[in-house]
Length: 246
Image: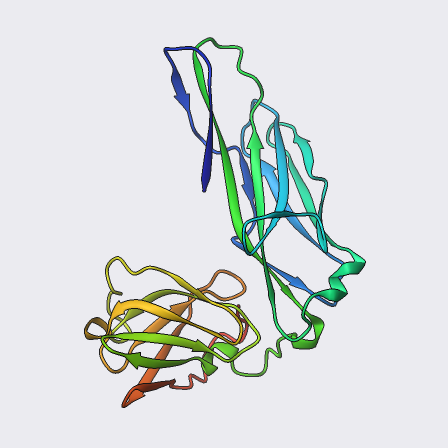
């Protein structure tokens, strides 16, 4: 969440309850489709709000191509739902077709001007990941999740996560075995396609059979159990794994 503040007067009162809600925590844009629609709604039962939407690239720069938002701004009456469409433009064909491309979808609520004096208005902004997934790498739900191809390599007193797949993988927790509490203060890490990233946790806290938790396409949190031999670790296949991933 990113919070923007608009201050009027010297003595203020605060109202910070979110009004505009989004129906998901991440977006998978299927490259075989021309658009994807997101549902939004105004949870405030008394006041209308404006909803402003835009996309950013991986570096945080606003973009309007090769994906664009329709409409970029809209009014939502009290308690009413609506939709935001992410539309592909012809330039989308110029994106890599052998791996995912990362964007960020932003949704900001703009409250009506308050009639009360000395009011501090807070505009809440939601920012979630949007993955453009080309049709050429569409997932086969009958196959094991691509995350099972992850490996770990031990470097000193830490592990590095290696991602040989065409998909972004977000690791949100690490533990020494299944069924136990994860490492306190664990910092989530996102590993890019065919990339690697350090796992910011001491090897002593996760041992030689680490269990990592990742986020799948639907916001679920499946786990991966690793078996280490020397400095290299591979996933122990799980026939019950969730077949969809991201």
